[in-house]
Amino acid sequence: MKPLNLKKDFPVFNEGPLVYLDTAASSLTPTRVIEAMDTYYKTMPVNVHRGVYQMSYNATRKYEDARENIANFINADFEEIVFTRGASSALNMIARIYEPFIDETDEIIVSEIEHHSHLLPWQQVARRTGAKLVYVPLTKAGRITVDNFKKVLNENTKIVALTAVSNVLGYKTPLEEIIDLTHQSGAIISIDAAQGVPHEVVDVKKLDCDFLAFSGHKMLGPTGVGVLYGKKALLDTLEPLEYGGDMVDYAYKENATWKDAPYKFETGTPPIAEVIGLSEAINYLRSIGMDRVKAHESMLQTYALEALDKLEGVTIYNPTSETGIIAFNIDDVHPHDAVTFFDEDHIALRAGHHCAQLVMAFLNVPATLRASFYIYNTKDDVDAFVKSLKEARNFFTSVGF
Amino acid sequence: MKKLEQLYRQIIMDHYKNPRNKGLKDDEDYQSEHIKNPSCGDDITIQTKVEDGIVTDIRHEGSGCSICCSSASVLSELLKGKTVEEAEHIAENYLLMLMDKDYDESIDFEDAVAYQGVKQFPARIKCATIAFKAFQNTLK
Ligand SMILES: Cc1ncc(COP(=O)(O)O)c(C=O)c1O
Image 1 (cartoon, each protein chain N blue to C red):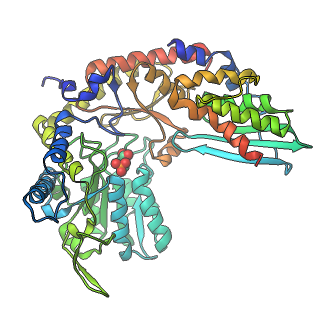
Image 2 (image 1 turned 135 degrees about the vertical axis):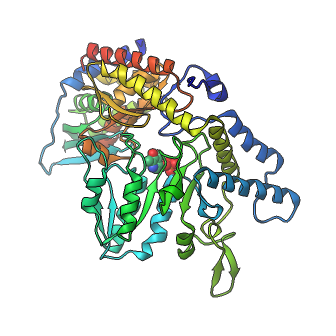
Image 3 (image 1 turned 135 degrees about the horizontal axis):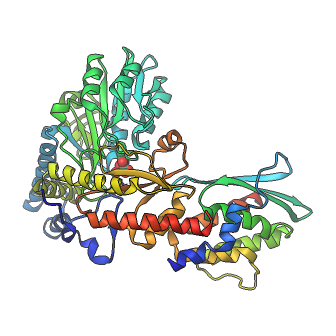
């Protein structure tokens, strides 16, 4: 397979030299996504589901076609796709709409490698309801395994909340078996797929998951839009979280009735341009092919790890990761000192705790550097990164770190 | 890489590697202020002892990048022995200097002048300010 060469599709590369290795935080935006959103604002910048005039009808069509397209992308049904502000907002919504079914006899399984956006909503549900919050023991490397999952799953488990891919360590959770086991014990599962859906085929029917969430801005789409997937039968039994326009069916003085899912979970004017942009991002990803996306990232990761393996004075925390995320530090150099060096070379890396403070505690470091790859990255990017890393290490040694 | 080399020249590295006045006191006469920058993990506590309107001791403890940790040490040397008013004035103007605003140029910032170099790295300015902000709060 020929390596992908897509920088021309991303206008930010015209702004000057840039080696962008921070997709795990946010991906770059291709021209066609920007244009799709532009077209909405230029040709039908009006609200959806409200106007009876032609332009509003067109906007509504675009918006709902996007829902259909996004549903297809993860093999969901149309009614199972709820638009939110992002993965965080979707994951919070899942916890809040499911909270009424949880009491102090229940257990909630989470893990230390969850992003704060998946950990804290359930931590707070546990605090409010008195349910027990249980952490899957991690392996030495920081992985969730089926064996370890079995150690915490029991008849009291009501909900399992796990990430598909760790945003720091890049490890994939063995979801299929875990979902199976979860259902066998009568619990339901919420999956944070913010780092999954952008990088490989995710099929919610095949997975048989109950809830799943992801964000637009990590998969070439705009900020401000995310997706909550919920099984139809489940969404139908749940109460809305927010009340207002668009989600209501009939309003009376003392009561009201709601529309069916997904609309009962979407009050107010939605992020229309953003939903259209996300749909276009999906078209773009499809035109490349998710298998190629995955193969490309994997090629870059292998190439980078081979070079990094030879470097002394650099610690890689996840050499066995199966995705394009590399967590590392230069020995004895705080990542914030290091990241400024890379920045001077126009290399964008993330330094910090990556919204996963429990992962930092697990690794016993205050923070790490993180490089993450996507379709626009090339071997040249990896070469530039490795070169800069060597120079950084030498520089910090020379000034006395 | 010249800019960075200048920044990390002796003063910052010296205070990073050999911090002065480090370690907190378990003493009620000290006012403590703890500031965290959760987005990067910088975490600094500054303690100040004031007697008769004079800052007689400053202690610090914490973890973070070289800019953050060294600036706490520099601060402790710079402001110890000053009157509260002087110390407040210097801290305020140090922050103004880093934010590229007008400041009192007659002040002798001693080693703290090195942090002017941080202005070339806007993403790092916060690292150089949190110790001074924590110090300001200890005087409140
Ligand atoms: C694994 C994971 N979950 C959730 C999120 C939250 O996504 P967002 O910031 O788009 O709400 C992120 C991204 O920061 C993530 O990496």
